[in-house]
Image (cartoon, rainbow, N blue to C red; front, side):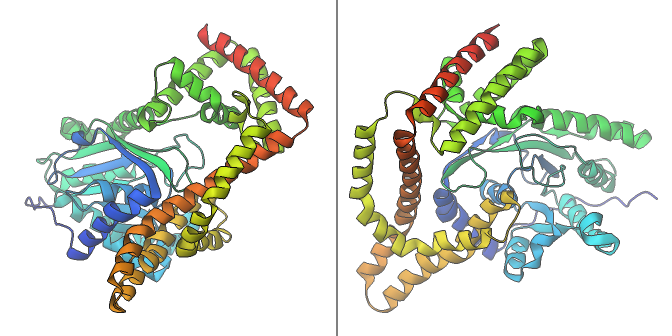
Length: 456
């Protein structure tokens, strides 16, 4: 039975509470949680009022859609999330207010659970009929590696369904996007969202009426190809850890510099990493045995560094006892300030540590850290505390606390990171010279061979 044609409706806007929360995200949480946040190709996004199905790879649980909520300031996007996320009453209320809708899966929620998807699908259809944006992650789950999983075509059923609801007289867009992080789980890292070219579905309407499966398969290939081109997709899972070690370590930085990329600028580092991964893939196809040997050497180097608990950058230049002493003195000078900062912000760091102990999936840790900071620790420490101080008559202390609290979070986070570097530095200095010399020799030989191989 053909669906009834619907009149064109205007997009619904965010309510006051949702707008307030988004302002909180943009002014407080994102500048604190992320060191840098990038968006490329944002201008390609169709204007609000056009039905848009935004499709992306899925790298980091709740952080992926929350970043879009922060970024898409002109609209209220709807996004689908696994039903288990909605079990917490407080989180349920917050993410529903942001536009989240639950999806139920047979292997997790059973057949009865899947039946509940009817309400979600009706809400998606309603949103698209209003010319709104719906965000979907067709991989069905977040990935624990930088690669692109298989796509479900459910998003295309929704998109073409919206076109059918409008009698195939209204344009519906599929918008490919991709997420990329400098690190998945740690705060004070970089994130970017890359927007591809929107795909208008109207050229496919007539074919869809005649052969929907073939058309959806063809469009899905176009969407997936765009997303793959926007992200880092390491297909060689057998050598994944070695490839990841090379691109994130000093070799990756040197490769970026040789090819005129800035390694400290995430969009360019992504382009460099893609070029490096492509070069490694091409070399493997050209000489499989040689690359197998090089990956074995990379594995040996990686495990040797991990066993000693040192940092690879220490092999660059001279890093001896004198440098360690200066580093330690600098940390000692900054210790009183760290003590003051952690005394004020301890809840920000303690809450995620406690919660993460009960979460086995490490890809959830970043989301847990973000949620704990977002919903509990920052509101208590950064907002409620200065209000209490103000009510007690100490406006100067309240103002100082309000301004200093986010600075203290950043400083404490950086200080702990410097502390980890100091520990790695100390292990490097006091390790057996024979071990360090052996790893340095292996590293120099390996990187030289890689350069020659990749230049062929």
